[in-house]
Length: 290
Length: 343
Image (cartoon, rainbow over all chains, first blue to last red; front, side, top):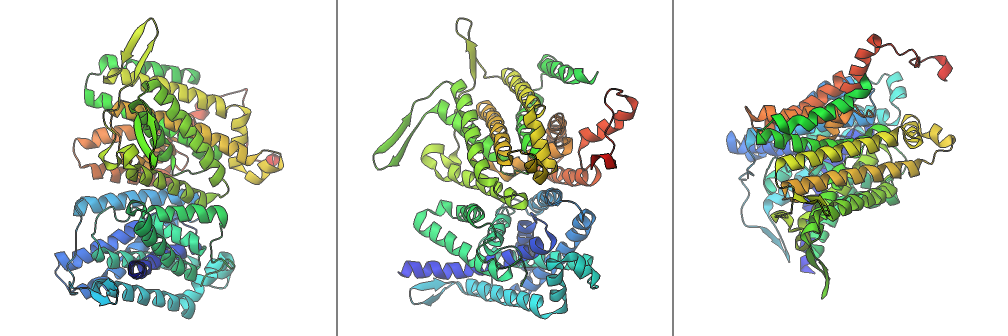
């Protein structure tokens, strides 16, 4: 039982970050119909940004997260402007190939700049874990979960309570009508990709210090994010949030009770099973965002 | 004139070991040949049926592992006290089994994944390849996991009565890859120029129209997947017995990307496309290696792919064909005009 509770605690911490990744991707995939293969690289980018800020520049750890989010926002806007805007009317396979090219360039640039050796970041949190009954969690991971929940809440408010969010929802439902109503669809696309990218970077910035940072950490982060998006249904933010926690639970239980080597296989088995049984996702209502 | 280009190319390639002695370059020729065969098989799915399978490396790796394990033998305990023991077989059987097994996997994956299209199909195929990679990594008893399968025997070819030859060297493997490549090319050429190929192209152009004229979509897609997977498995087998060591990294997504880049750059849906693309991306590492780190090679691959999609979205071969088309008039075949009569 105590082992199970520990798995649940780990699930919550991992799931918060997965939810961030999933929400970012479901926004991009839902609104822009772009299969964003660079999502995992933006996640890696966020993690390395924390390393840069804390370990190289020697600044405060608490400063690293907002800086990484801002950097992700900027990089996402640049990618969208340079690569996706000229491809706006291409079919989904073509933009997918462009994003794969971008993924390879980004991943190998990271390896070229930082080297293949995994890095770790020192944090101001105490080494001794927080013990609640049978469960023990490090303070850093509690911080990770708190920040992830905060960012999820901020995204909810952004999508549901702001003018930009309303324009994004309108573009998701019907691009042409939104455009006729005076929504600047090009700007919405750039904003969507930038916000989605910054959420991925935030995920890396949170989870990177909790584990180690390596150029290949994003390899399957993209695919895990896809698993979450597929679980939750396209463009469904609540679905992506729940999907993040479900994937984390499946991984924790799979690693804990089946075999730790198959931890990463859980996401892929979920993708295959969901797509073959209920391709619209577990939480699909109608095709709408929010 | 154009009919003789493939024959001339084969003759030229067959003469390579006669005037080239640098073992590094010959090695590059062999691995490029192996990946070109894999790219040709991917082109059948990507170029002719229009399905972007990004899990193609799974079939390549399955062919490699099945072939290697058949020739090495194994002893696996499936349940408590229930052993599956296999004694080493000749490599040729491994090659055949690897090809057949990969084709079988192509059938199963095709049956399952062609229920979804577009982005979802892509994600299912990637997921399949990743699951296979994780099995290869974790089923240590069978695959040695990250320790790799080593001492894989090289190909032994021969006819009873004429003696046998074991292909330890590069030259023998070079000719083997060339022969398999030519066979794969001929098989794919005959397939796509038959009524099956026309059905596949009809599917790619307009799936609902193809269905309405009575083309059984799933049947042709699965058929393409089987042939494609089997050829990929054959190339994987060649790779395993040439390198004589394989590890789960053979399933890395980057290898699928390599095949995709070759097909896209050369020209998807053309017979010559994967060969042209294979030659280009086989040459890049050889040239880049002399002055830069391996990461730079990959950065160039990625950048090249983006540039090609922006500049030549149909690839090099169709662009060349258009370039040369006006100078070679073809009176008997008038180019179809995109006019109202097609509607």
